[in-house]
Image (cartoon, rainbow, N blue to C red):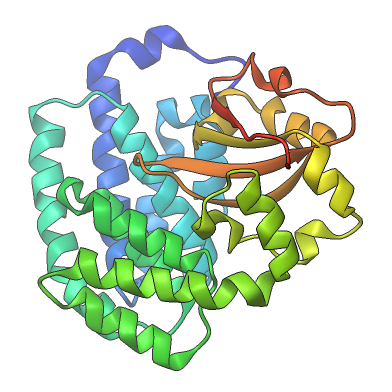
Length: 294
């Protein structure tokens, strides 16, 4: 949120509805497998020129960097649009627009699945499923799968096949368990994984910890330093921009993944020596502190 946030302008629900409609139009353009660059630029400019957009620094930055040739910027913008649509208060006009774009999104899903060829393609689908309220569980499972940055063609094909089945959640859960099982030993040693599990960390989360994140950390630190799981909404980086600085100054980020609730993240942190868990009390986060190693 911008430091010069205009609350009067924001509280006008007609203004919120107008921005929501523009966001929905842009999301519809981004949903297509082959994004039309001309349509994208036109929809992007409309959002950036809206008066309310200037009040949301993170959102404005994401849309400003949106490019037709950059999948990462498209995925990031879709994530911010999903968050913005959930934040804004709509009216009959925005509801009508949502129903229109929802049809566009639903019609695009099968084509997006059949053209899956990379982890970015999967990440785009995560945002597409996040847009559809009744596909939340699929979005969460698929998001956790993308955390492993899939490169194996066979696994990618298995995910693609699972997404086209009626019991998609069951199939994705199986694939996620298989990937986690393979990755637990590939990412960190069994000894390190055992330390985390003895401290109470779920097997799935421990399997996401990479050797790079443990660089320069001793076993004693992993056993004795405060170990936390933070759960927070992604808009915290906009509403509390100093939050990221606090994490970087006071903790080692071991891994992060999508949370159970929509638009939330779980982040596993090992606090630096002498730091305590209460350093995050001033932020809108849920904190779980793990037990000491026994």
